[in-house]
Image 1 (tube, rainbow, N blue to C red):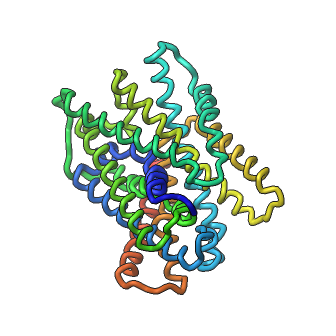
Image 2: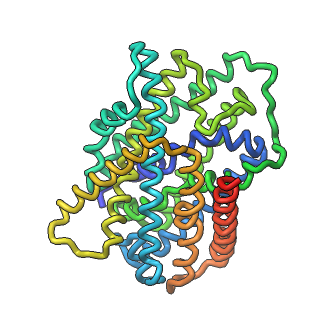
Image 3: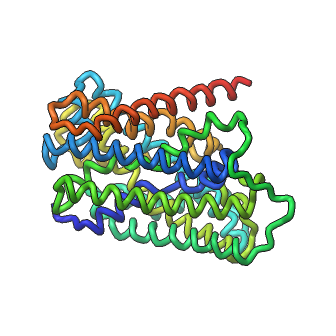
Length: 386
């Protein structure tokens, strides 16, 4: 209850902005500048609606509110699904951080030391460095690592703008404002939602912030959403202008092996390092909640469950899972449920003071969530089998 507005802003922003930023240049290439920008704004707007609905629900419970507790009060039969969705989302995002780090660190080492090292060994060292932070029990304790991550992201975007201004763009680059329809259209919607999902940590913020009044929480949410929106659009736009139709799902794979790219890779490794504990923390909490058991030795259970999550994400990351598939599946399922569907269901099933404008936005958010869920799952299943 002693966390400041600034520390909560940094923590929530860092939770929101992570590996999802890397997919925005590809989304711009898939949909075109105008269409991608509109979809980013819509997804961010509905993410804000979900967060506001959650804090309205949390107000009825108090500082001890969690998504799991709200589901028990509002729709008890959904509790296990809620717990699993949060666990799956946080686990998937944690996994994506390791996959990206596995791709980024070896080129850095090769550029600096002319030495080739196995990605699996790199991840072991990476986890030895960031792993201890995963055992912290409160998000406010991670405020300094979160600040480091936010600063690194800003530098990455500034480096992108610098490269755009001082790089000769090839003549064969094609830029679309509204891209032609393609099979990638359906699979991309979940990635927009994925990039704005920080909902699992809004309850921890609500519990820890000194002033958790609704106006102050709304101010925090608006500020985080607008900042994330600005960073995503800037990063996607300038990288798309540089690489055009050659943009890869992970934009850093497009970067040349020069000094600036090495710096950017290094900064993004820092981003992944400080982001990983922010996802493992709620992942652990909801894994324990899924068991629905009151453990006598909570410290030991917390330690063992955290260790299990770290080991599982490591082994899956080194197995070679595709990053784009992680984005699509998690974005379509867990992120869409947490961000767009659950908040609306819980809001309308609790005895709360109604706001007609918020009610309308809630219905629209729910419909958008169903659309994203359906189209992305269809895309993943259909194109995997064809």
